Amino acid sequence: MKGFAMLGIGKTGWIEKPRPACGPLDAVIRPIAVSPCTSDVHTVWEGALGERENMILGHEACGIVDEVGSLVRDFKPGDRVIVSAITPDWGDINAQRGYPMHSTGMLAGWKFSNFKDGVFAEYFHVNEADANLALLPDDMDPCTGVMICDMMPTGFHAAELADIQYGDDAVVIGIGPVGLMAVAGCALRGAARIICVGTRPKCRKAASIYGATDFVSYKEGDIADRILDMTSGKGVDKVCIAGGTADTFAQAVRMLKPGGIIGSVNYLGSGDCVKIPRVEWGCGMSHKTIRCGLMPGGRLRSEKLAALVRAGRVDPGLMITHRYHGFEHMEEALLAMRDKAPELIKPVVCID
Ligand code: NDP
Ligand code: ZN
Image (cartoon, rainbow, N blue to C red; front, top):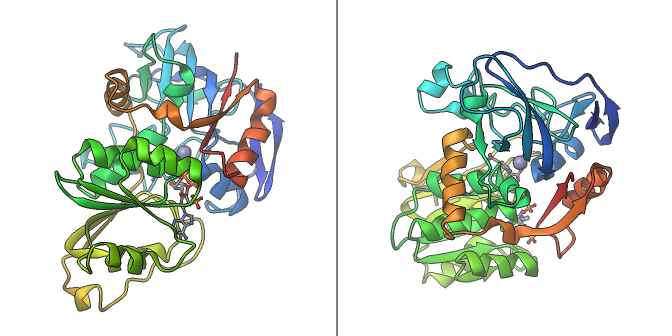
């Protein structure tokens, strides 16, 4: 079969590989809609995971089940499914501790385009199909379904990590597709004010629809100073981070009230250390909390998010700005995600 791969750091192209084998608990899926992620960009062009040779890229896909193992109960060939970007080993002890994303090791629930071939291929393998697939609702467009693989669960995880409560003043740093879903998550959890950091007009417009109340540009001075000004020097209750760099944490700590919480899902593609400013950290006694995480993944989360979409509470499909038809456009879609033109939020490739 054909797959679109990372050939090495900074290099991509089509390669041939054998169709994956299906274990007794597993499934083999034929994708019908896939989307490149900023994480693919960090992986290929920043070498964030280190060297990877001939690894098929991609971790966001809806597809049709082609084969299931003998022990799979709830899925059969022909089913249309949403495949979670994170596919944990649910029996692992870290999953039992409440951290499925770290099952079998740090970040090891993130298998596609990390520890094994990803979804930009004619076929791909899913471990523990009953626990990691969800049925795509009959009335849901697969392109909208693709937003439930990673963007929605990750953005919502930022709002969960920040423990957004009714009436909170929140900041969302970064309003690409992940940050936009963090905005929607903050709004659904009851935040009062949602100040968004990001500049692309298309993203700002979408953020307003999802619940943003104010905007700040990181290109026009220090965002912590700006947000302290906007809150009469008090700062905010919660900060979600879905963009920026290792230095963004220092700004987030500065803009937080004592006892505030930072929820970050940002993937730090470069830099060795994260610095925390000592004084704004209360000389170590501020009760400010930093929580960072890979999203949990799995079937239940996909089903719940699909239910929210079907109930009309949030429409992640609004983020799809570029639709390509046919696998031959895979490279174009990935480069669009890398180059982030002003009118881009999220590209999707439909495989008809
Ligand atoms: P985008 O690149 O589309 O968006 C990034 C956002 O950050 C934009 O709004 C951008 O503003 C803003 N930004 C850029 N530089 C700065 C800065 N210096 N300070 C503040 N804001 C800045 O990214 P995505 O939404 O696709 O992804 C966000 C992050 O989430 C990525 O690192 C991605 O790898 C990670 N991720 C994490 C996952 C997890 O499970 N934890 C899963 C999936 C993704 P502008 O409008 O100017 O472009
Ligand atoms: Zn992703």
